[in-house]
Structure formats: structure tokens, C-alpha cells
Image (cartoon, rainbow over all chains, first blue to last red; front, side, top):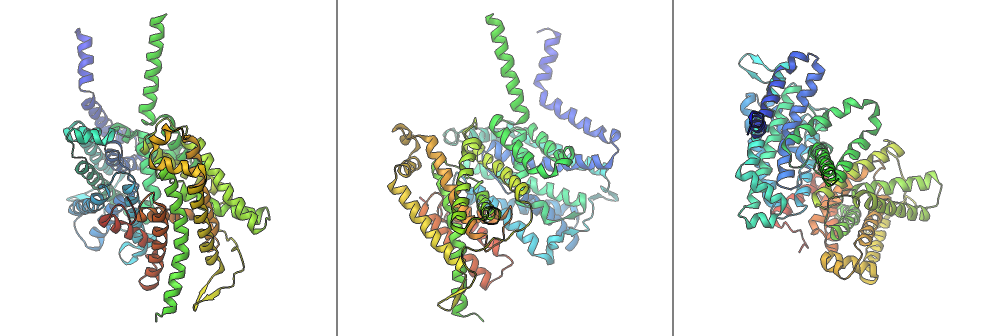
Length: 332
Length: 288
């Protein structure tokens, strides 16, 4: 190997770590160049969505299961933090953790029976759970504030330093998002993650190789629900206001769209999917009436032609084109 | 004061909505049996049935019977288009991809209905006069009787179709063993297309029948359709008697709990019962 090859090999070997470092540095300096609070708010929303989508993608992409109810876990996290901090007067950080644990327990209760059977029971169970949670948010107005929502949630704080503007919140949410990203990147390369990938490929084969498929599915489901709950708590503290509208079944569908656009089973794709779908309304606010067409259309087209996701799919198409051309040149 | 009369009233209301859930659940089961997927477009077939009926009656000025037939046929046609141009061109036959495709198509269809018919709530006239009839002391809307009667007719027709016609028999063959069905030369494409047409007709009929009682809106089918899905799971996904039993059971539970417990959480009952059933008997009541 000569010097250049050595450098390239080093870069290739450490591509994940280098990419994470580059992303962290970019995010570290981002507020220095971007001082428009609206744009910072958008990137914060991307971070919150990214945390949910990273977890959901582990479940959909790696475990090969369907959840159409992650907005319920997201909403439980948000309302849990709101009720805990305001109504019960508990400190925010422990509340956030306790709520995440409770939501994980709820997910465990749903996941254990529903994942006993393969197929579509989990789709129904998660969907049903979302409708139940949403209806309770709407109807139990003494506790949740009903359709008009719940306001006055305090910002998170360390001592006297409060995360109450876009810039400080940027560092907070993106720290959470990067920790989630690292968690997912490491998880999918661990034995557990390889087991999950085997499970998504072929459940029988994975079982034959000694993967406890049921337990693995339940674990990932619970992990993804806890991540959604944490993101929900951050959402509540960021905006200071939550309303049931943000946590309906259509939000769950949007989260699934983010997973699919980013590529099922692609950790980096989750970030892209969350960013793309969150920014989409900004680029096409004139087409408000056609929003459903665009969302549904993108989902259908990606699934139909690039089932690996928008970026991964396009890259693969290009690779195939290049390889074909090379072969043609070699033959000529 | 609750009397036997109230109870009868609740039972009639429950059977009415139960019949609707049963129709929708049958639609879910037909597609599940031939393609092995959950067809989330089913919920929009319900709304579309009501919308087409609205246009046929009030837009084109057709009388009731041709209006119903046209609306049901129209939804069946749209369902076939969905299968032919929405699902079949997919390059992947992974069921996860196909189910998410139906979610995407459902979003598109809902967007199309919102553009064509607007977001306003509309009212659809009932099939016959609005004068309630008294049965055993309970007053029942004629529309409720129509719902039960036509659901029964649909079930009889469906049974005849699945047991007496060659297309229906081949669909059952595919449901019981797709590989063996392919080996004996049953055309998979035609079977899938027919299953979508049947599912569309069932969903459309449910929409035509129920929207005079509820109101008509571009997303009226979402909650109804998901309850139909819950009914299908409750009865055992893929089983036709299960779908009917699940639908009627769910309708009864819902109206009894709304009558005796609380009507605020009426829409939740279906899903809570479903989650409980998944705990105790995950295969559903009549599932294999």
C-alpha cells in the first residue's frame, strides 16, 4: 500500500466515526452562522423527529415489524412531562426519565402479546393504542386540557441555566439526537443488531441460527417506544405547549413515511428522512392543498421504485449504471 | 332509568353499526386471504362509497337504486385500479413494503377526495323515508333495517360467489395454499384483482349505507374502517364467519357501553376490547 491508499483505507475504516465527528462539529458551529430563530426552530424539530425515527427505524427496518402508533408513545412522553412538571410539580429531568420508563412498560404490555404472532396484529395493536391515547387526550380534559391543549410547560434547566431559547435548545436536542444516533449505530453492529438484521431477512433462518426472535422484537419495540417518549418530553419542554393534534394516527403515518424515505434499516437514512419530511412543507407552502398528494405520492413512488429508501436507492441505481458501463467498456 | 326497551334500543343500534363493521371487516379479510397483507385503502373505500353516492344522487340526479349500484360499482372499479396500478407494479413483494404502499395510496385517495368534494360535511338522504318504525317497543330507523337487510344480502352473495363460481373457488384455493394454486394454473393476477374488486364493493356498500346515519366527509371512513379492521382481528383475521361475528360483537359492545357507561369514550371501546382480546386469545375468536 502506498501513502495515498493508506489514507483512503484509514478513512474507509473509520468512516462511521469520522462521519459522526463531522456531523457533531457542523452542528456545534451551526448556530454561529444561522441566527434566524425560525430556521433554528426547524432544525430543532428535525432533531426531535430524528430521535423518534431512529428508534422506529430500528423496529421497522431491522426487526421487520410494523408500528403505526409511535405518535402515541411520542404523545405519552409529551403529556407525561407536561402533567408531571406542571400539575404534580415534579422536577423536569427525573420526570422525563420516569415517563420514558412508564412508556417502555406500556410498550412491553402491548408488545408481548402482539408480537407472539407474526403478521399484522402489531399493526392493529399499535394503531388501536394510538387511537385510545389520542381519544383520552381529547376527552379527559380535567387532566390533559382537552382539545385546546396543555400550556405553561417550563423549559428544561441546569441550575439557573435554562434551555429557553432556540440556540441553547439546539445544543440540547442535538446532543440527545447524536446520542441516539451513536446508540443505534453501535447497536446495529453488535450481536443484538446482527440478530435483528437476520430476523428481518428471514425469521425462520434467524431462529435456526439461535436468535431469540420474539425477545429481540419485544426489546427493540420497547427501546423505540422509550426513545419516542424522550423525544416527546423534549418536544413538550421546547414549545411549552402540547395539544392532541400533534399525536394522532396521521402523525404516526408521517413517522413511517420518514422511515421509508430514509430507507428501512438505514441509520443515517433516518436523519435524512426526518429532515426531508420536516422541511417539505417549508418548500411547498403554496401547494398546501396538494400536501396529501405529495406525501402519499413520495411514499408510493419510493416504495415502488426505490424500496431501499431515497438516498440508498438512488446511490445503488448509480452504482449499477456505473458497473454496467464499466463492463461494456471492458467488453469493447 | 334503564328498561328493557332501552336495552332493545341499544341492541338495535349495536347491530346496525355492527353490520357496517362486518362489511368492512369482510373487505379486509378478502384481501388478506389472497395477498397476505393488510389493505389500509379499505378505509377510503368506505368514504368513497358515500361520496360517489352523493354525486350520483345530488349531482347526476339519479334515483336511489341505480345510485347505489353505481356507487358500489364505482368503488369496485377504483379498487381494481388501485391493485393494478398501485400495488402490482411494485418491484418488491415484501409484505412490509406492500402494506406501507397501501398506507401511501390511502393518503393519496384521501387527498383526492378532499380536492374533489371539499372538506365540508355533507348529508346524504336515507334509502327510504325517515319515519322510525316501532319493533318490540324500540323505535328503529328504516335505514337501520336496510343496513341489516343489505348486509345479509351481501353475505349471501359473497357465500354464493366463494362456493359456486369458479373465480370464487380459485380465490379460496389461493387463500388456502398459494403455491399449490399457482401449480394448478390459477392466474394470480386475476385473483388479486377480483379480491380488490370484492373488497372495494364491500367497503363502498358500507359507505353508501352508513353515511346517511353519520355525516359524509372525506375522512369519515378512517375511524369506521379501522374499527372494521379491529373487528376482523377480533373475529380471527381472514376468517369470514369471524369477520361477521367480530363486527356484530364490536357493534353491540360499543352501543351497550355507550348506553350504560359513557358515550365520551365510545370510539375507544373497540380498541380496548381488541387489546384485551390480543392478550387472552391472540388468534381472535374464530382464528385458526
